[in-house]
Length: 498
Image 1 (cartoon, rainbow, N blue to C red):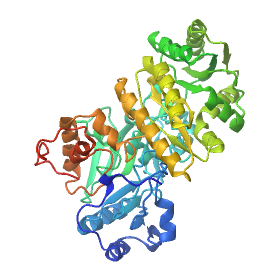
Image 2 (image 1 turned 180 degrees about the vertical axis):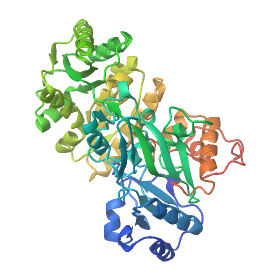
Image 3 (image 1 turned 90 degrees about the horizontal axis):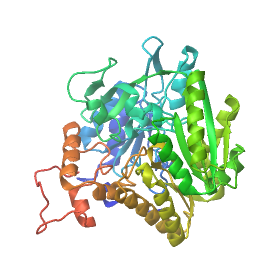
Image 4 (image 1 turned 90 degrees about the vertical axis):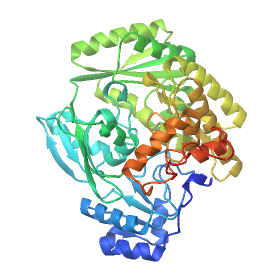
């Protein structure tokens, strides 16, 4: 496996593991603390298995009071803390620190309330994404963000990564569907950020908190917005014999002022892989397929589908199907949501990327990635949120072959760097974590990174909360050649480095 980036190395004196475990044992019940090396192995990585590290211990608090006590003990001992949700993250955001403690919120999994009239739910961070919708279903409501891992991923992790899903085009990301967050900082202080009301006074710290990747604090409670279930939902499946035409069809739909509930694309290799897995009935001879969903009232859906169909036909679709019932609609989406496990069936390992580009550059990007796959000699499956340009190419490799791992990592870097060059960004919903920290130096300049560090320091002056993730040090960028350093002196020498 690849080594962790240098930024993840310990800073300051190495903590005494025995003292750390003893301190946590005084604060947590015996079944809420893991220190046995065999059991710690389960926490050595999140969904990004290319990067692994063993923590000193894992804390599994069941209450906010235990979270506070854990953080205060670690702060007193100078021990880094890595917050962890369900461990489904794909950017290494929950990769342990070798001299730190993992604080998992998995056991804080109660749904505290569902308010039908206010259309809100209050949940603990360990509640599964899909469980929120299941609890709200009797009231005709649901929670809109739907990551492909929604059966397992938790709301706390969704907040940390600002997760999306196949319906985020119309209904937004986590940041658009969370009203309030209760969070504990490294000092053990509780903060209430946001409000159940439509707005709250002061700076918009909720937007800063959501997507902060565990760098600012540990989430202990979340108030989410619920939305009414649409009366009707239908999905259009369109096949294209040319991937450029499929990309143009996406641009045409959005240009026409249509914002579908979902607009997804899969290339031929992906379609073949998922068809073996879920038998969704996809056309296997198509170079690409689009899934375009419309929801609302019967009249709204009929009108939107008619407009979409005309645009898809004009763009050169060779086949168009419209789901006849709810079972068929779910079957269409089952294949898209099963893209990741399907990749695992045909390759020893896969590496999921997360670049985002302008929609008009989709075809250009896809052709470029096809060339990269040939140069690196690796398989590639393309599946992505076409409506907002969020790519999820799956690079197929073998983790038992060091050269295959090296090529996969280099392939991923090329994808992210090209995303930036095409006017996009290095992440759409997976976060930066450890995986993309070097590419942050490509996307942002010194002044922007300065500001990111100052925000971090305002919440965590000691720099113990998930250190070495998401935001690179200026020194790191200088070492990579992305920042000019004059006579070995960094700009802003007063800025805390962590």
